[in-house]
Image 1 (cartoon, rainbow, N blue to C red):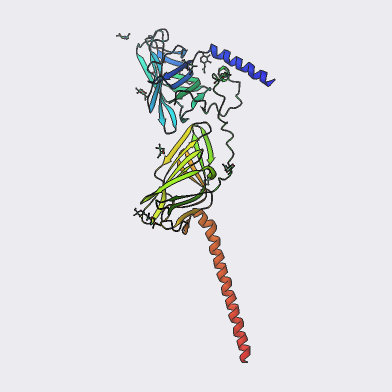
Image 2 (image 1 turned 90 degrees about the vertical axis):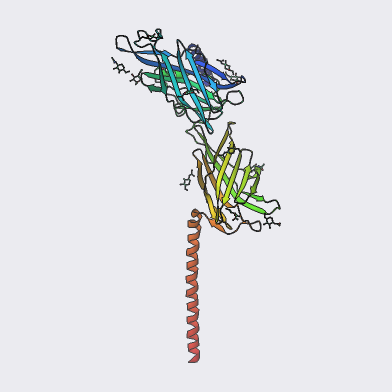
Length: 418
Ligand SMILES: *[C@@H]1O[C@H](CO)[C@@H](O)[C@H](O)[C@H]1NC(C)=O
Ligand SMILES: *[C@@H]1O[C@H](CO)[C@@H](O)[C@H](O)[C@H]1NC(C)=O
Ligand SMILES: *[C@@H]1O[C@H](CO)[C@@H](O)[C@H](O)[C@H]1NC(C)=O
Ligand SMILES: *[C@@H]1O[C@H](CO)[C@@H](O)[C@H](O)[C@H]1NC(C)=O
Ligand SMILES: *[C@@H]1O[C@H](CO)[C@@H](O)[C@H](O)[C@H]1NC(C)=O
Ligand SMILES: *[C@@H]1O[C@H](CO)[C@@H](O)[C@H](O)[C@H]1NC(C)=O
Ligand SMILES: *[C@@H]1O[C@H](CO)[C@@H](O)[C@H](O)[C@H]1NC(C)=O
Ligand SMILES: *[C@@H]1O[C@H](CO)[C@@H](O)[C@H](O)[C@H]1NC(C)=O
Ligand SMILES: *[C@@H]1O[C@H](CO)[C@@H](O)[C@H](O)[C@H]1NC(C)=O
Ligand SMILES: *[C@@H]1O[C@H](CO)[C@@H](O)[C@H](O)[C@H]1NC(C)=O
Ligand SMILES: *[C@@H]1O[C@H](CO)[C@@H](O)[C@H](O)[C@H]1NC(C)=O
Ligand SMILES: *[C@@H]1O[C@H](CO)[C@@H](O)[C@H](O)[C@H]1NC(C)=O
């Protein structure tokens, strides 16, 4: 039964799609490879002044005959330009921002001299309206998808984007099968079919690309089991150990709207590193991630100075984030840093590091083993206090016992002399 229902729905979508207006463009780079893809529908509502000084509001749609002249792809930014009618155009600028990209601005040019759209216009000028879209934080190598209405308001212009599917910075010439959905699309897994105009829009998953849809953000991935503890060491040229590290590691990162966590599996992790005069490095490579730790030292202490994480996600997109101004895991030269409790560190806005059973010594390793440990504050309070209290109690008991023994002896001696 339900199968039949979906089939009917799909046919309906097809019908709706063919009747609807909308634009699809493939922008190619100098080499003829796809570098920007866009498919969307836009409704405009523009208010303008008539010759008799009254204001008039006209509504029109982005026609499907729009052309893409003026669209271009650069290394760091790209422009999508859709030209239509008599001198009107809509352009979007996209920029890269680390592992994400965004639409920075929408420029809408409308020509009031076009009497077919703006009859009796007082002005004959071309007006430029700059708008700020909410199309941000899209994972690199993913398509931005938004079937819901996205209303953008500006002076004299209201613009509604819907059934939007865009990918800027397309790598290797083919559109990604992974999607970053807009917020409006994600929380409503059960779409309320009550709204008037949207009823046609909600049944339009225009492309068939939605198959590997990301898991709904409402059900976050369950916390994985604690990562196993791995042991890593780096040797100098004459094979003395110069860096020692033991820890279980998990990373948590955000790609577009999606947050995920990954454990480092020590049994499939290869490692390498180097020790310099005042810095040392440890690099871990598993099948899913590459992490490099850079430690630095002055004459008194060492600390974790830089971290760079590259992860290959299940979607196939690569995540990379790093921070080169950290001061974590600080301890005196000649000792090691120890933190057994689970710890989390915010490395960047998009990256969190979780450690378990951590002990590191990046400089001055003696006899291939850790030196005295400097414990992190969490361990200090949870382990040191009981130890101090225990030691104090033991001392007290010892004093009482000694006092008792001395007392017994004195009395005994006293009886003897009697
Ligand atoms: C864009 O390219 C895809 C294939 O990559 C093709 O199916 C589609 O028809 C093209 N659209 C336009 C408007 O050229
Ligand atoms: C028309 O709109 C402009 C703003 O765009 C406003 O300043 C003007 O008062 C309006 N005129 C009338 C007749 O409503
Ligand atoms: C968008 O990009 C084009 C071409 O790169 C540039 O001329 C224009 O000024 C940009 N617009 C905005 C609002 O950044
Ligand atoms: C626009 O209108 C002005 C007069 O209001 C006229 O001089 C000018 O030629 C017109 N421009 C166009 C492109 O029609
Ligand atoms: C845009 O929308 C607002 C609020 O819905 C409305 O007040 C305004 O008149 C609209 N402007 C145009 C040009 O449609
Ligand atoms: C866009 O305009 C068309 C008619 O021009 C209308 O059928 C459709 O519902 C509108 N869509 C939105 C999202 O406003
Ligand atoms: C989806 O796309 C694949 C190729 O990418 C094609 O084989 C398949 O028939 C399409 N399915 C639908 C429902 O369009
Ligand atoms: C190895 O080299 C380090 C300096 O890099 C030196 O301190 C150490 O004594 C050397 N060990 C051996 C066995 O040669
Ligand atoms: C690595 O360890 C995990 C458990 O931590 C285990 O599931 C997996 O099979 C192991 N893989 C290899 C290659 O030993
Ligand atoms: C630490 O750094 C200083 C330079 O800042 C360097 O002279 C020293 O050898 C380094 N190593 C140790 C173990 O102190
Ligand atoms: C991290 O490493 C990658 C590859 O080695 C490099 O491209 C990137 O610039 C590094 N990032 C930082 C923040 O150091
Ligand atoms: C990170 O650690 C703090 C305490 O240091 C704790 O309150 C917080 O819940 C932890 N966050 C996560 C996501 O584990």
